[in-house]
Length: 325
Image (cartoon, rainbow, N blue to C red; front, side, top):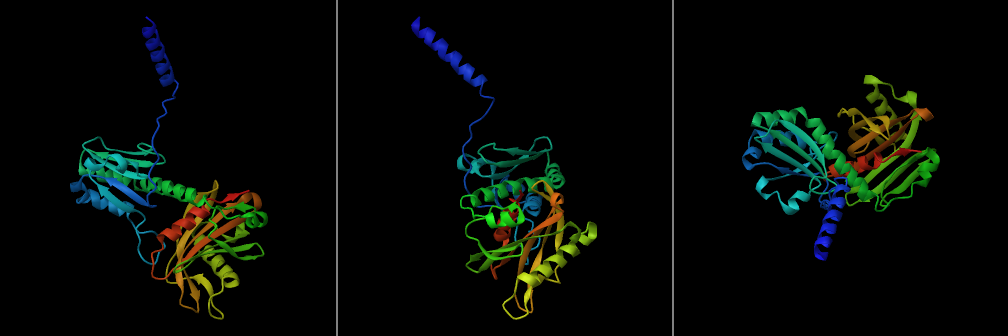
């Protein structure tokens, strides 16, 4: 009788605990793989056919604004039969499920945490391809946000003290201690990080709101501003040389949001006037209407003969951590 009572009490406690768990699942930590790698779970025949081609065109498309083509994501294909155990713990996963109703789902923390899983289904190859094409922007955005979040998490492990920037410009940024302040003049900051083949740099300054017009004139104003700032503050190796915008390459400009404020993102190529130096840049003009100004943060890379995607991605992660205090 005593044993039966204990069993009954244990059963009641177990049920009570289950009912108060709020349906929370305990999932393992996702593996710390390389940034911008995506595990693509798809049948080998589909991967080698049109479905695989559309996946590659969508996720391995070149990053805008680089002088040499580099894919936005590196794809690692695996058939569903091997998608078990450690393979399910990737941070970013694309699953293709043929023979199911046409649908695209963007899920979080399915097999591990943090994790973004995109599941694309369709009864036929054509339905799967249609789902990818219709939702390509959302799919890319979901994976990129996950990777930016991971990069920012890694950056926070060793943060530079940005108090001089906060005191003068009223903004904060998360960037690593590997950077140094190379110039601090009249509210203009130039920060640099030495790498084996060159430098990764970014600069911060402010302009009046009226300095950047709306519409088609915006890109012209961004280029004009960065060229004038480069001429004043970023001198080249030769007398009379300075950093400007490469004339032969039209910058890409788009709208985005930073710190819940409208911003313009401009990607293009810089060069040093009167010298043979160039590389990619990424420029953000953030509207700070409360203070009647644009906050400009631009990152650029000088690294001849090496890939630059990861450096630009680091700069993007830093700039998107910006907060106006």
